[in-house]
Length: 327
Image (cartoon, rainbow, N blue to C red; front, side, top):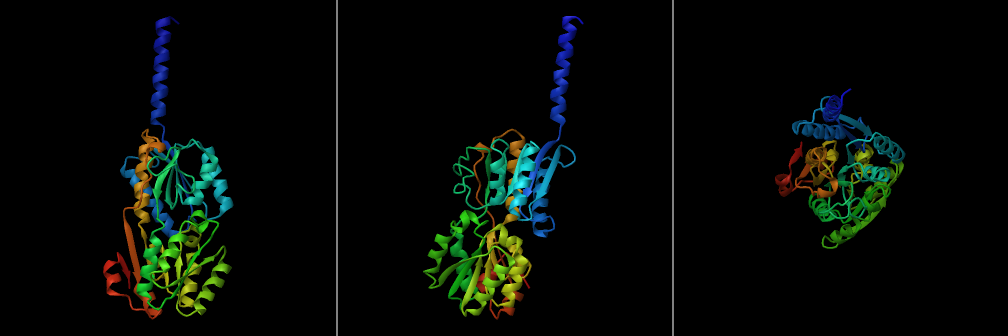
């Protein structure tokens, strides 16, 4: 082959190679902290994929999604995190702190976008909110200052409460629970309310704790943001109803299934916004250059049927401020 023909052929081959790679679907992983049978979590995932589609990333077209569900199992989380990293994906969406930590253990190169994480700096995911610095960025779910809001709402809807327990699993809660505890203690003082902490790691412990709280007159419960409490919301809701314990929750998923009251960031909005960071990374931006974002939409939900069952009268101020009133 003459030199000119060889160079032309080589140039054509390289051009074809680049063109073929450009047409290859981008590969995005998603590691969800709940079970694939959890309706609430499937709604969050659907929101994420719908927003990706709106941004031009169509599953089955220019996008391949690799979705895994941990079912809140620590061992399964580690196994699935390693499996996703081994696939050498373009970017991975990490749902919650335990999932983000598991993925961080496996890769410092694949971009990770976290969502529903409370304290990314304290947990070592990013160097700072404004300058993440590594391969991780994302969307903060809740700040510790919200403890005061939960306390305030609970004592407004149940003014007889003088003792509030905050319940969480120290193995899965942000910073083992320490992220919220100082603000929890601070919030109790001005409201002349005693604050206690209770740890739960199983349904049996949940039952023992809530039954004990129910025996103490003037007691209430605050359920901390925690992947464990969300996964175990069915027994929690059943037990607080059975023991007549006024309870405030961190997300609307509890209230739509029978809980009394919730206040917190809109998780659907956070999943929608997380798609924008995945989009920007797929288009060439670096996770290190994308600042961690704070929640901008909050929602309050109240269940009047549950309030009536507890013998509580919901203040007009709460009804007017609620984004959703379940009757």
